[in-house]
Image 1 (cartoon, rainbow, N blue to C red):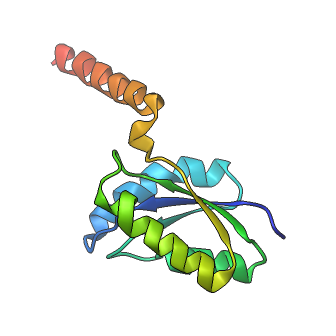
Image 2 (cartoon, rainbow, N blue to C red):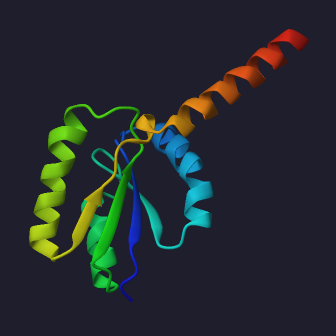
Length: 125
């Protein structure tokens, strides 16, 4: 099996409630997209390393990391690329890092929809 694996990468937190929120956000994608998993950069499990190593052990060599970040700050400019380089070297995987979801205009439209619903709900009160 060598199909591409999709990794939804969240920052991570030691607070389980924070992780629960991201897992709920990821759930529709995880159900709809074959070979997709959520991973955390730090402070939570599964780690990016664990998810890549599990995929490699199952025969995958191609991965796309989709950061669940609003913008590309230090983590996405330095830390995550360094992690990816180390994983590619140690596993032989080819890992593509996508732009953060916050750069996609669809997210802006989703935010607009949430705000519009909230305003409509508030108007009824």
